[in-house]
Length: 460
Image (tube, rainbow, N blue to C red; front, side, top):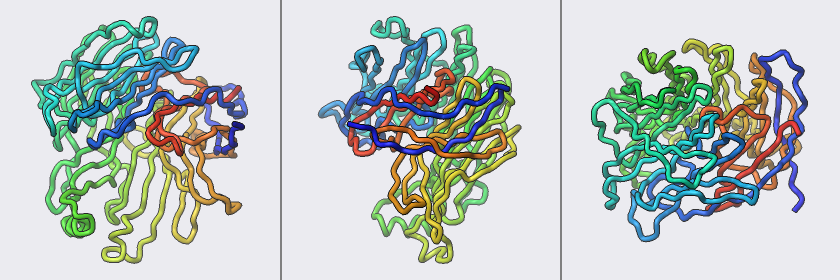
């Protein structure tokens, strides 16, 4: 089948003195990896969106997957798998037949060929919730089918881990170090640091920001964070995920849905530490909020540039339309793909990359990810849907290249046969190297319960 041509927006960013090459994307691979059966446990293969299930190391590419165990009751009714792509396609090199789990297994890697899988096996996979025992398993790319080595993370005390881990897993491929976060209820995240000597040498707790202005003040759990680790500095951006704090809105939504619970995803928070082994995390900084109109925010990605600036990208929806007529009738709906630069905890640049609002409809951007080239050009990959300037429907992946001052430029096409709606990339945050080749793993339009992979050379 001849590929359908899709278009991407692109602009140059370079921290080097070299002349930027023109984008001319070419699809090298587009294929399915595995299919799955929905587990109906509140998670799924794409659930660990802040981490990644795709990594490249030592010229090899690996992907973790999630398989539903037939007749096993939720919540721990899945097992994780590890795939490697060889010359003949994808090969399942490992499957955890001994344990059950709820969530997918994020992966990370070092430049020396070590591949790591973050797992959270249930201690007793009985129906419903229950305790879990986190682990990190080490594979070797050169012999990926060999039994993995358990690194058994060390924690502060004896935290009550459960199947809802909301964990974040990041690697520093240059210094051979890892950091792992795992949420504990609605109070904090436990973290542990694996250093270059092969020891879990530091651990502690990351307390949530405090919701002092809520009707009932309390901690604001932060979930689905994007975490980066570089030379022991750690950067984290995530979204609020708590029970609806506005009692009147909660009651109204309960009557609409019949559900006794509803969650808030509308405040974006950021924190960092210059050295996780020695210094505590800074106070949380609120980057964006849609709290006044019961809107929605989703984290996209985070990148630490060589000059120390932290780049973040995320999406916003202005309001919950179900509540508009009763609570804020004058407000207009809007969808935004936003970008910001942060230095020392302060936003120094902020841009809207794509917007669609009532009265001025445009394309809606979603699922943004960063792609960084070896010469530090920065691209934002995302899905664009809606109606184009020519009046024709649009449903395509795009890339927007960001310059150091946040400017954007002209579109260039990505010839994918099917766009990805939800996906991981071989991100630097997971230990993959910077690359002119974009690698994607996820669910494509019309793909149903299939996880697919694509490799696109941006500068063939």
